[in-house]
Image (cartoon, rainbow, N blue to C red; front, side, top):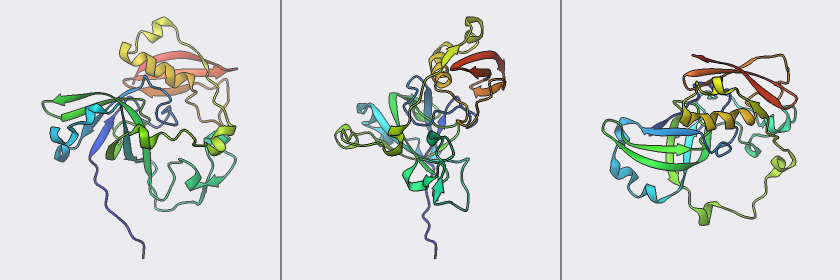
Length: 229
């Protein structure tokens, strides 16, 4: 008999990513990305976050809501390995797992006491799609959570080279000033799937209210258009 356990959605993330495309592959890779954690009505109590402002970082426990499925596979193909090598699902952070649960460390920028939404957590460095359900929030505790002798398995044998982003001032000015650094950080880390390398293809990255269209060739990402979605 398959044993199950109920999880309550306590909050949702509000981010500039309406789709999965372009989301950083790990939290903290683009520190300039801003997001908000908005609690569900039942959990909008200031007392529930009392003392949280003393921590610089938080753990978010959340659901890969776009990857929920009934079946599962014991092996997956991590993009970090080019999408061709299979490793055990529990040796990866793939969203395609028996329980579609994610874990992200984010920086807590401030706590806002909103008149209607209750306490709102402003965070940076999040890797969550807009509307993602959050199951729990825990403080990041450096003395216990930072392990200086940890090793990185197969991730240590791969490297991520940053792209050079060419973004004309006229196009960049369309993006809200407070969101520009985050968008540039996403673009330089190459938002394309790792198996796509067609220099003639124009990609569209939904970001906030905009659709950012770009091409990539020989390590250079060229922004072609920025249009309202």
